[in-house]
Image 1 (cartoon, rainbow, N blue to C red):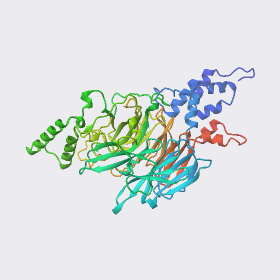
Image 2 (image 1 turned 30 degrees about the vertical axis):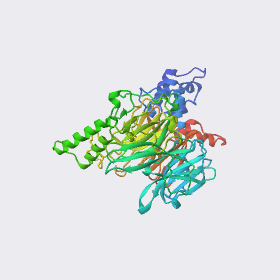
Image 3 (image 1 turned 180 degrees about the vertical axis):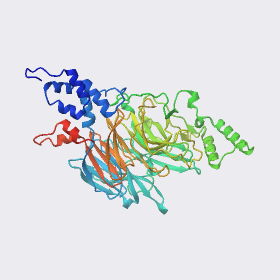
Length: 565
């Protein structure tokens, strides 16, 4: 301004100059005078800064909860947990999984050192209890989950049985006394297990029928059972599902459908003219669609089996032994599979990985859990099932055309996020024991469980290098605004759910296996790695609050200049 107080430059010219500056320089220039300060907070200026700095597509609107472009820019920079605040080194081997209690006061970690550790989420974080599972013949611990009222902890691991055979086992630990309350066998071990209610949990069992054909049974177990018993602590059978081509059910989780109509964040479906992933509705009302191969009458099955065998004897049909086994299993299941039951209201969904072409998990199965199945009371061991209804049909199947290596639900349970390593386009599985090669780049897919549609475009940035026959699970987690995942490239990653952009890379010295947001504070994130450490990350905003007693707390723009994530 000149001596009379009139500005030397018009606002429009200052605005054009500010457009050429970066965000930190704009904020610094705003301290010069009142005119520059007013222009530095211009909404159109910060809209341009936002799209340019974060490289967001111009057709993506502002977050529906945002009050201004400036505040939205600041939110994405200032509230992302990208500042490392603590490294926990109490584990002596690879850390495989992390889970928070619903209150956020505690979290648990599982490791190749065969311990389940329970931590107090204090400042700083402190170890509360360590449970060594080696006395129970466990090889390592791999997964944990708190029940709804945070009174019990489900811990899953690999159990070494007779003759060095391995399967899974689930332990239930009291969080009051840390006593081991029960143990439940779990096969295969990567079913993991999960809570259905506060006192009942879901486990799996696998029965081999042929070389590449099997049956997965999902059980509902009471959490309070005899710890000393070595028997399978079965309370009630939920579902019995046929597996073809060496596939099995793995990675079970439960989605609560009660909040589908009021999600924390409603995601736009985007352009899905040609969705890369197909969703099959097996419980639809259309007779033509619902009557799949497994749901036809027994007479059709016998006729189909007779025609197939006649074709082979006549030399018209050439099938390998494995293809023949799959074909016979499909025909025998026809008319002996219970169709999906319809319910007026959605209660809960059971979600798991499965497949139909090969042993690598390439499909997501969804089965509705009805109210009468939520309790251990009532028919057990399949009582009430008709003699012809040997298997249960799935309600929905999502085919991702790739190897699924991680799944996670949004806090409102409406959206399912899936880590997948894609198969080559057009690839065909000729041998179920030889799945197609998988991409190094991980696709983070998003599915709306209310509409059963894929939404958004796949999130990308993280990578994995393990081949498909050695591929392992990489756990992800979802908060109100962010989604995070581990990766084999020694980093954890954070994306914004609305803008579909990667906001931060969190470095470790080895593979990052698991991430976990605090359910009460999304600006706190934990990462677990093969380097045997757990790292705690907080946002720049939170760090300033913790450091508030300092005489001169640094303003936002200095954080922007000196603490880039």
